[in-house]
Image (cartoon, rainbow, N blue to C red):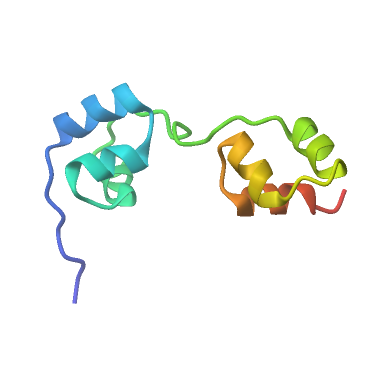
Length: 94
């Protein structure tokens, strides 16, 4: 058994991706999983920035907030990243 083929408009996906810089938003608009979009672009060797979905956030600010008693959940909201990202980063062994 192979994988079921997911069909969507690649050109439309490229436009949305260029506009939003988000695999998640591109997939949502096309009605497919974000990884399906990413996988199709990579398999078709379409030139893309593979880090577009990564967000930059200030870990020093997150550490200061945590030292002041702010919860992981609230830090994640402030930084606009997933709470697991905050938790992993702040509890990483140095």
